[in-house]
Length: 101
Image (cartoon, rainbow, N blue to C red):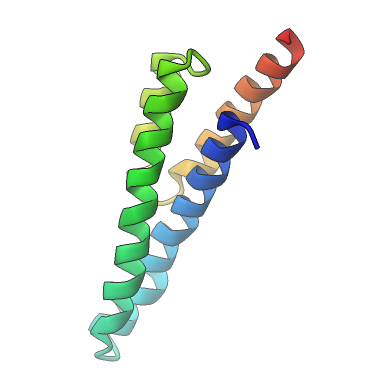
């Protein structure tokens, strides 16, 4: 599994974890009084967010990802559905890298 494939996989997984946190765990905590949902989903989301940051840095250092695209992906990770839109950009970039080699 190459770096760009890993980056896309972690980005999408992080996006799903963010939506789970907002749409499932937060209502469980504040409506039904189940704070453990936020603790565990939030913890997993935090790990995935940090992994995304590390993979973005690695991809930039290995010249597989331009700085501008890395910033777009990083900012998109802060928005609830952002990673799903950023994945299109990452997929296009990955395909261009594969065509060049």
